[in-house]
Amino acid sequence: MKGLAAFIMRGRFQALLVTVAGAGSLMFCWISAAAVALVILRKGVGPGAWLLAWGLLPAGTLVFVYGDSGPLTLLVGAAALALVLRLTVNLSLAILASVPVGLLSAVLLMTLGGQYLEQMVTYFGEFLATLEQQLSQGGEAVVLARPDALQIAGMLGAGNAMVAVFCLLLARYWQAALYNPGGFGQEFRAVYYPPAISLALALGALALWSAGVSYHTWAMICVVPLVFNGLALVHARAALSGQGRGWLTGFYVAWLLFDPVKLVVVGAAIADSWLKFRQRWARKAGGDEKQD
Image 1: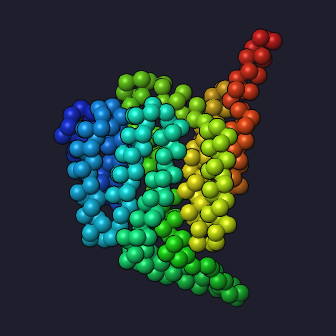
Image 2 (image 1 turned 60 degrees about the horizontal axis):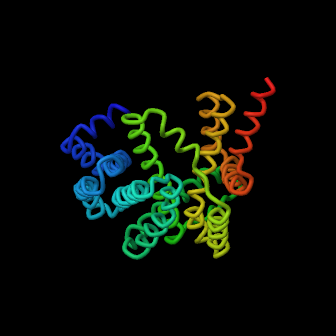
Image 3 (image 1 turned 120 degrees about the vertical axis):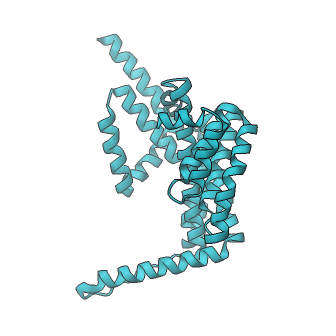
């Protein structure tokens, strides 16, 4: 991946090639988004905006031909987060900006992507009907809930916010690997939100969740910054305790597969706002070293 970052930063043509090639693919648009974010972080808003404009051409073509606005919103979302990071030099604030990015992308889908959402509703309905038939072969009928357009818009908005943050983190990792080795790890492990922000995010998520089943996926948008705060906390703990990549790999496997682990990560992030676990761990580690 470092070699790809070096290729992107080699010149305008190389960055353009990666951005346009990835933006025209449903599978690799995240690479384009990370490339645009890297250029914004390293070279500034002007070169990044020029690159984004070219990337929007194939992404816009996907919207026109297939009605899929995912690559387009991802490009714009990652560029917006990179702009916030460049202006504030604060990774926590840049990740926090994923909330308006996710909400705005979901609202735009509801406003302008009605036909695409109808197609997604039909697709999910057909898929779940097939799944019901397979699960009902044992004799007992199984009925699965069908998502409506509002739920799908929230789900796609949350997904866009999450992937946009991943693209930003990838771009920041590339930047550090090329120009400041080791800097990204320290910056990511320091991601933290004060109690007022964590409380506002939690209350926003609870308010959307209590608005009805259709808004459950919208509530996930407010949780995105807390997820990355929790992941940063896990990395900080692993670094302070000397645990290696194997432990982190096992954690991420569990995080991806088991919902209770996801809840624990979010809960730890909220608790960290008040308890400041990293400072406690650092003081304890310092005390243990003095006793030795």
